Image 1: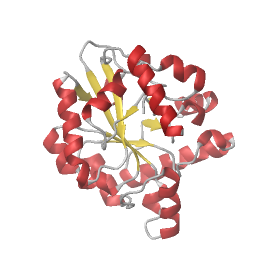
Image 2: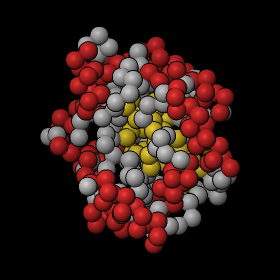
Image 3: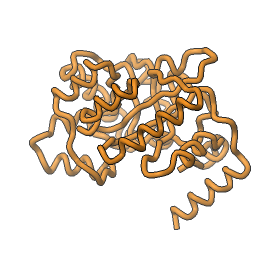
Length: 261
Protein backbone atom coordinates (compact mmCIF):
# COMPACT_ATOMS: atom_id res chain seq x y z
CA UNK A 1 0.00 0.00 0.00
CA UNK A 2 2.79 2.45 0.94
CA UNK A 3 4.60 1.82 -2.36
CA UNK A 4 1.36 2.30 -4.31
CA UNK A 5 0.75 5.65 -2.59
CA UNK A 6 4.32 6.77 -3.32
CA UNK A 7 3.96 5.90 -7.00
CA UNK A 8 0.63 7.76 -7.18
CA UNK A 9 2.24 10.87 -5.68
CA UNK A 10 5.06 10.57 -8.20
CA UNK A 11 2.62 10.25 -11.12
CA UNK A 12 0.73 13.34 -9.96
CA UNK A 13 3.96 15.32 -9.85
CA UNK A 14 4.96 14.06 -13.29
CA UNK A 15 1.66 15.45 -14.59
CA UNK A 16 1.65 18.83 -12.85
CA UNK A 17 5.14 19.57 -11.45
CA UNK A 18 7.67 18.67 -14.13
CA UNK A 19 10.33 21.31 -14.78
CA UNK A 20 13.45 21.45 -16.93
CA UNK A 21 16.32 19.73 -15.14
CA UNK A 22 18.23 22.33 -13.08
CA UNK A 23 21.64 23.51 -14.22
CA UNK A 24 23.17 22.05 -11.03
CA UNK A 25 22.18 18.62 -9.74
CA UNK A 26 23.26 16.31 -6.94
CA UNK A 27 23.04 12.54 -7.43
CA UNK A 28 23.90 9.77 -4.98
CA UNK A 29 24.29 6.01 -4.89
CA UNK A 30 25.06 3.38 -2.26
CA UNK A 31 26.95 0.24 -3.31
CA UNK A 32 28.28 -0.10 -6.87
CA UNK A 33 28.54 -3.82 -7.47
CA UNK A 34 29.84 -5.22 -10.77
CA UNK A 35 26.40 -6.24 -12.04
CA UNK A 36 25.43 -2.54 -12.05
CA UNK A 37 28.47 -1.14 -13.83
CA UNK A 38 26.66 -0.96 -17.18
CA UNK A 39 23.78 0.96 -15.59
CA UNK A 40 26.20 3.33 -13.88
CA UNK A 41 28.01 3.88 -17.18
CA UNK A 42 24.64 4.64 -18.80
CA UNK A 43 23.93 7.21 -16.08
CA UNK A 44 27.21 9.02 -16.71
CA UNK A 45 26.68 8.94 -20.48
CA UNK A 46 23.12 10.28 -20.20
CA UNK A 47 24.14 13.21 -18.01
CA UNK A 48 27.10 14.04 -20.23
CA UNK A 49 24.78 14.01 -23.25
CA UNK A 50 22.64 16.56 -21.41
CA UNK A 51 25.70 18.77 -21.05
CA UNK A 52 26.69 18.15 -17.43
CA UNK A 53 30.27 18.29 -16.19
CA UNK A 54 31.04 16.25 -13.08
CA UNK A 55 32.28 18.28 -10.13
CA UNK A 56 32.96 18.03 -6.42
CA UNK A 57 30.85 19.59 -3.66
CA UNK A 58 32.73 22.89 -3.58
CA UNK A 59 32.35 23.38 -7.33
CA UNK A 60 28.64 22.51 -7.21
CA UNK A 61 27.77 25.42 -4.94
CA UNK A 62 29.85 28.00 -6.83
CA UNK A 63 28.20 30.50 -9.15
CA UNK A 64 28.53 29.90 -12.87
CA UNK A 65 26.61 29.04 -16.02
CA UNK A 66 28.08 25.60 -16.73
CA UNK A 67 25.84 22.60 -16.12
CA UNK A 68 27.28 20.68 -13.16
CA UNK A 69 26.53 17.28 -11.65
CA UNK A 70 27.75 16.17 -8.24
CA UNK A 71 28.21 12.38 -7.93
CA UNK A 72 28.36 10.86 -4.46
CA UNK A 73 28.09 7.58 -2.57
CA UNK A 74 26.93 6.88 0.99
CA UNK A 75 27.77 4.32 3.69
CA UNK A 76 30.74 1.92 3.34
CA UNK A 77 31.19 -0.69 0.59
CA UNK A 78 34.24 -2.45 -0.79
CA UNK A 79 32.55 -2.32 -4.20
CA UNK A 80 33.66 1.32 -4.45
CA UNK A 81 37.29 0.26 -4.39
CA UNK A 82 36.59 -2.52 -6.89
CA UNK A 83 35.17 0.12 -9.27
CA UNK A 84 38.24 2.39 -9.24
CA UNK A 85 39.20 1.37 -12.79
CA UNK A 86 35.63 2.08 -13.91
CA UNK A 87 35.79 5.60 -12.47
CA UNK A 88 39.09 6.12 -14.28
CA UNK A 89 37.65 4.85 -17.57
CA UNK A 90 34.66 7.19 -17.21
CA UNK A 91 36.96 10.09 -16.23
CA UNK A 92 34.99 11.01 -13.12
CA UNK A 93 35.84 11.61 -9.49
CA UNK A 94 33.21 11.09 -6.83
CA UNK A 95 32.63 11.97 -3.21
CA UNK A 96 32.35 9.04 -0.81
CA UNK A 97 30.54 9.79 2.45
CA UNK A 98 31.91 7.09 4.74
CA UNK A 99 30.71 5.48 7.96
CA UNK A 100 33.82 4.45 9.88
CA UNK A 101 32.32 1.74 12.13
CA UNK A 102 32.39 -0.97 9.40
CA UNK A 103 36.07 -0.44 8.56
CA UNK A 104 36.96 -0.63 12.24
CA UNK A 105 34.78 -3.74 12.73
CA UNK A 106 36.15 -5.93 9.93
CA UNK A 107 36.64 -8.91 12.22
CA UNK A 108 33.34 -8.49 14.09
CA UNK A 109 30.65 -10.25 12.05
CA UNK A 110 27.84 -9.33 14.45
CA UNK A 111 28.71 -5.61 14.33
CA UNK A 112 28.88 -5.70 10.53
CA UNK A 113 25.54 -7.49 10.23
CA UNK A 114 23.96 -4.97 12.58
CA UNK A 115 25.37 -2.10 10.53
CA UNK A 116 24.26 -3.40 7.13
CA UNK A 117 20.81 -4.26 8.51
CA UNK A 118 20.56 -0.68 9.79
CA UNK A 119 21.38 0.83 6.41
CA UNK A 120 19.05 -1.63 4.67
CA UNK A 121 21.62 -3.11 2.30
CA UNK A 122 20.77 -6.56 0.93
CA UNK A 123 23.66 -7.17 -1.48
CA UNK A 124 27.33 -7.83 -0.79
CA UNK A 125 28.06 -6.77 2.80
CA UNK A 126 31.81 -6.19 2.76
CA UNK A 127 33.24 -2.83 3.90
CA UNK A 128 36.41 -1.07 2.85
CA UNK A 129 39.55 -1.98 4.72
CA UNK A 130 41.94 0.85 5.69
CA UNK A 131 44.18 0.34 2.63
CA UNK A 132 41.21 0.46 0.25
CA UNK A 133 39.80 3.56 1.94
CA UNK A 134 43.13 5.33 1.57
CA UNK A 135 43.28 4.29 -2.09
CA UNK A 136 40.03 6.12 -2.81
CA UNK A 137 41.51 9.36 -1.54
CA UNK A 138 44.93 8.79 -3.11
CA UNK A 139 43.37 8.32 -6.56
CA UNK A 140 41.67 11.72 -6.38
CA UNK A 141 38.27 10.97 -4.91
CA UNK A 142 36.86 12.95 -1.98
CA UNK A 143 36.27 11.27 1.38
CA UNK A 144 33.43 12.78 3.39
CA UNK A 145 31.97 12.11 6.83
CA UNK A 146 28.70 10.12 7.10
CA UNK A 147 28.97 9.64 10.90
CA UNK A 148 30.63 6.74 12.66
CA UNK A 149 27.67 4.38 13.09
CA UNK A 150 24.81 5.50 10.77
CA UNK A 151 22.11 6.09 13.35
CA UNK A 152 19.28 8.61 12.94
CA UNK A 153 20.93 11.69 14.41
CA UNK A 154 17.65 13.42 15.26
CA UNK A 155 16.71 10.44 17.46
CA UNK A 156 19.91 10.73 19.51
CA UNK A 157 20.63 13.14 22.36
CA UNK A 158 22.34 16.17 20.85
CA UNK A 159 25.74 15.60 22.47
CA UNK A 160 25.75 11.90 21.49
CA UNK A 161 24.98 12.83 17.89
CA UNK A 162 27.81 15.36 17.84
CA UNK A 163 30.17 12.78 19.33
CA UNK A 164 29.27 10.27 16.60
CA UNK A 165 30.15 12.86 13.94
CA UNK A 166 33.38 13.82 15.72
CA UNK A 167 34.34 10.15 16.09
CA UNK A 168 34.04 9.63 12.34
CA UNK A 169 36.21 12.69 11.76
CA UNK A 170 38.85 11.32 14.11
CA UNK A 171 38.87 7.86 12.52
CA UNK A 172 38.92 9.20 8.97
CA UNK A 173 41.83 11.46 9.85
CA UNK A 174 43.71 8.47 11.26
CA UNK A 175 42.78 6.19 8.34
CA UNK A 176 43.40 8.59 5.45
CA UNK A 177 45.66 11.29 6.85
CA UNK A 178 43.13 14.06 6.23
CA UNK A 179 40.19 15.53 8.13
CA UNK A 180 36.98 15.39 6.06
CA UNK A 181 35.69 18.73 4.79
CA UNK A 182 32.25 17.50 3.70
CA UNK A 183 29.39 15.83 5.56
CA UNK A 184 26.15 14.02 4.75
CA UNK A 185 23.78 12.87 7.44
CA UNK A 186 22.36 9.33 7.55
CA UNK A 187 18.96 8.62 5.98
CA UNK A 188 19.04 12.10 4.51
CA UNK A 189 15.50 13.45 4.95
CA UNK A 190 14.82 16.70 6.78
CA UNK A 191 13.31 14.85 9.76
CA UNK A 192 16.58 12.94 10.26
CA UNK A 193 18.60 16.07 11.08
CA UNK A 194 18.02 19.28 13.06
CA UNK A 195 18.78 22.98 12.77
CA UNK A 196 20.94 22.72 15.90
CA UNK A 197 23.00 19.88 14.42
CA UNK A 198 23.33 21.73 11.11
CA UNK A 199 24.70 24.80 12.88
CA UNK A 200 27.04 22.62 14.93
CA UNK A 201 28.40 20.88 11.83
CA UNK A 202 29.13 24.18 10.13
CA UNK A 203 30.83 25.39 13.32
CA UNK A 204 32.94 22.19 13.32
CA UNK A 205 34.39 23.33 9.99
CA UNK A 206 32.55 21.32 7.36
CA UNK A 207 32.50 23.18 4.05
CA UNK A 208 29.24 21.53 2.91
CA UNK A 209 26.39 19.43 4.31
CA UNK A 210 24.45 17.13 1.98
CA UNK A 211 20.98 15.68 2.36
CA UNK A 212 19.29 12.86 0.43
CA UNK A 213 15.88 14.29 -0.46
CA UNK A 214 14.70 13.32 -3.96
CA UNK A 215 12.48 15.84 -5.71
CA UNK A 216 14.00 19.09 -4.45
CA UNK A 217 16.75 19.72 -7.03
CA UNK A 218 14.95 22.95 -8.00
CA UNK A 219 15.62 24.30 -4.51
CA UNK A 220 19.22 24.92 -5.52
CA UNK A 221 22.37 24.10 -3.57
CA UNK A 222 24.24 25.91 -0.84
CA UNK A 223 27.01 25.06 1.58
CA UNK A 224 24.66 24.04 4.39
CA UNK A 225 22.27 22.24 2.06
CA UNK A 226 23.42 20.26 -0.98
CA UNK A 227 20.31 18.51 -2.31
CA UNK A 228 20.79 14.98 -3.64
CA UNK A 229 18.49 12.62 -5.51
CA UNK A 230 19.16 8.89 -5.44
CA UNK A 231 19.89 7.34 -8.85
CA UNK A 232 18.22 3.93 -8.96
CA UNK A 233 20.52 1.55 -10.80
CA UNK A 234 17.72 -1.00 -11.24
CA UNK A 235 15.48 1.59 -12.94
CA UNK A 236 15.75 2.90 -16.53
CA UNK A 237 17.73 6.05 -17.23
CA UNK A 238 14.50 7.80 -18.26
CA UNK A 239 12.92 7.09 -14.88
CA UNK A 240 15.89 8.64 -13.08
CA UNK A 241 15.92 11.69 -15.36
CA UNK A 242 12.23 12.21 -14.53
CA UNK A 243 13.10 12.13 -10.83
CA UNK A 244 15.61 14.94 -11.37
CA UNK A 245 12.93 16.94 -13.23
CA UNK A 246 10.16 16.63 -10.62
CA UNK A 247 9.66 19.80 -8.59
CA UNK A 248 8.50 18.40 -5.27
CA UNK A 249 9.50 21.33 -3.10
CA UNK A 250 6.02 22.17 -1.85
CA UNK A 251 5.15 18.54 -1.18
CA UNK A 252 8.35 18.02 0.80
CA UNK A 253 7.92 21.25 2.74
CA UNK A 254 4.42 20.39 3.95
CA UNK A 255 4.79 16.63 4.40
CA UNK A 256 8.49 16.02 5.01
CA UNK A 257 8.31 13.31 2.34
CA UNK A 258 9.67 12.99 -1.18
CA UNK A 259 7.64 13.22 -4.39
CA UNK A 260 10.35 11.41 -6.42
CA UNK A 261 11.18 7.79 -5.66
